[in-house]
Length: 303
Image (cartoon, rainbow, N blue to C red; front, side, top):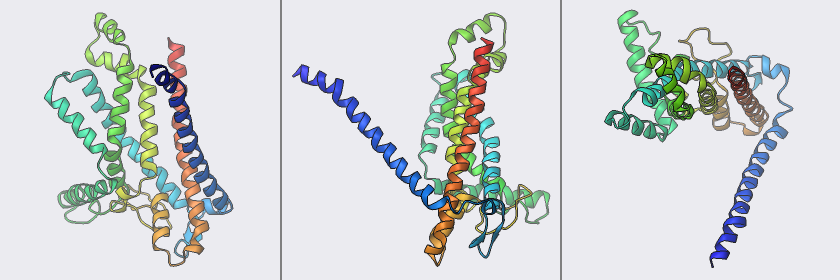
């Protein structure tokens, strides 16, 4: 009996794991292959560089591409300082047995499980109605500028959505820095902030960038959180201010797939837009991966 269990553990479980991996890869190949086969003919230079025309049934998707990149960029600028700062406090400053730390960790765990649509309603109520209208009332004497859906509020909503991912990955990166590094720095007279700034954070940079990659992957394709906070279906121009509405690829796909009166006519545009969204997300992730690899090489060279 023991020999049978040992044989099963040695050969059976790895085989089941390999079979599961193969099944996942097969599904991924089928999905991506279907998108590429049906969408590559639509993705032309004109499709990528022109503004939409005729209610999105003609022209291109350049405003949606620009809006997606701008949204991800603003989201990253908002979430990284907040997420890294929170992780540094929890990992380096807060007492291990503090009730406050326990509450914050449970809050992050619960935040990670909240449905995306709830973040959209939160962004509408808090950022647009409360913060935006408050700014208009206090500084603009009631003129509506910030109290309306805008790319700023959409980016901040996505920043809240991706915050748990950034905090968790940054904490793991900080824990991976050997404790001896901190002890040596303190023995040389460094203050706690100097230890964090000059020793811990540089050695955790690659892990922090991993959090950036995950945040980009999560936020780049989200639709529900930005439906109420700034995304628009048809805007044949680019946002020039943080208070402007914007087009985004994910929301464009959603509306065309659910609201178009002629689904067959919109299928080529849908497939082409989804393919562009996948390629754009891949490009953003690749850029972050290359930056992370470069940082790792610099750290190895410094050592």
